[in-house]
Length: 146
Image (cartoon, rainbow, N blue to C red; front, side, top):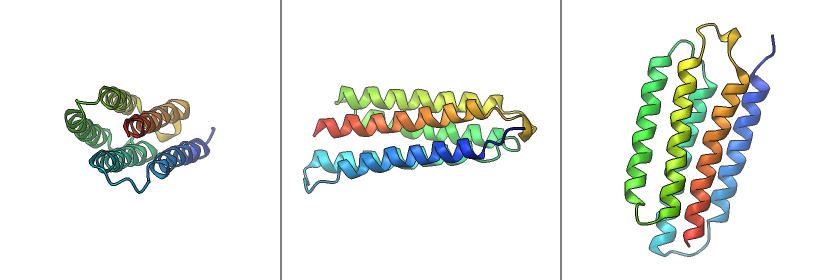
């Protein structure tokens, strides 16, 4: 049986690198309202992404219902951000993509078998990578607004 740990570690490393790169590139001395709003958005997106990654990397076979409920809450947080950013179509579109990726992650949770040995590591990695990529796209869209 193939172990899934290397795939999970790789996905988390890519996720962290993308998000830290996005945060580092936006950390200028510009203290305008736009920059502050982008910093707030990036922070919230990072928190949502980290929560999603940690949930998907955990043992989902024992707590699918809890994980789905948690992902619903993450989706609600993205919806709130989208409402706050409806004046910026690029950010709003990126947030839509982030929401879609979280929905796909929730769909993945539904497919997790009760036997952890039967876990589809490729599907897990795809869900994690898609969420991470969508989070990075939100950061990029907000950075482009400056």
